[in-house]
Image (spheres, helix red, strand yellow):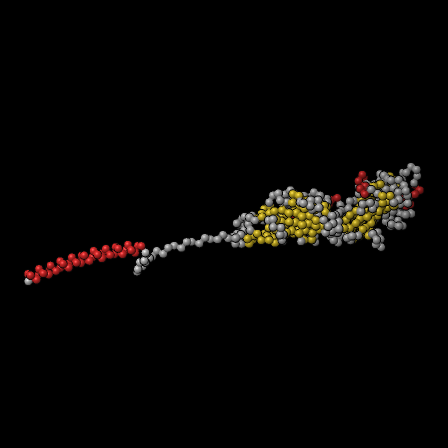
Length: 444
């Protein structure tokens, strides 16, 4: 199992994998301001440059937040400030994000026109006065500073708009969450403690209007000043993943497995939100190892929305795919099948080749990846044994033929006949011999 101690960005993972993943659903970083901690002061913290005034010498026209010695605030150009809720800290420009903590942002507004210029014509009133807060990023990386920027504008002030910033520093990966319903306006007028529309605060319809007794209209002088307050919650963005593999349909998942060429394996990716905040647009991706082929149509995802599983498009190995949003504690399981290539060059006879299969899941600020190892061994085929050739030597004749029953009787008859013929020839020969001997004696 891997936990998101690695805060490598999703784009960096894509480059590592030599893939181009879709940016659909990811936070467009150009819409928010994040920067390394060391570079905080390299950016404009307030603006624009403008004429300034003092408590004793206010402006002769409508202008916002340009007094440098406000008795309560000091330099009004620094009008966006932040502090940790429940702490004894003073409002300032910088805080360190602590998981679980809430932070209050205050945006001060003051029309610096002199009080004696306020009349029925309203020429020195700030008209159509509005505030727009820059959208707060949901997630930030370790070492980054998030800019909290507020811009105040009006149709008749000089300059037409002013802005200021505060910063939240992250010492670990965290998520920032605007607390809806927390924005209110505070002053001494009829609008005191009025709720501010959340969407308008962050720019909808041109921003939220400010005022004293009437929205969008602010007389000159400190007694008509006020501030907008809202809160931000810091959550820890945590998630884990576990990549395992099993023999086809065996449901015995491990981190390492032995296999043979041509075999099909089941892979599983388990994702879980281990943090305290909602994770949006979680993306999953897989990088097949060489010598493996995905089995089309086998990708399934199981989660709270689809407890019995639903088939997904086969984008896991090309562009990855968005598996949705997950609240704290929720999880998702992705399964798919892979076949080991029956390639004798890749997997030679009698050798074990280790193939790794890598997967990744991520949100817009962090990714984690895990892998399994497949030990592929091709067994060598058995070589058939040759049949022994016969001995070329002539076999020896037995000294005595074996007795063979009926054939022995026949053989006895033949032998007896031969003996009988021999005896007759012997008797005839003896008679002839006697005759020759008698004749010889007579001549003699």
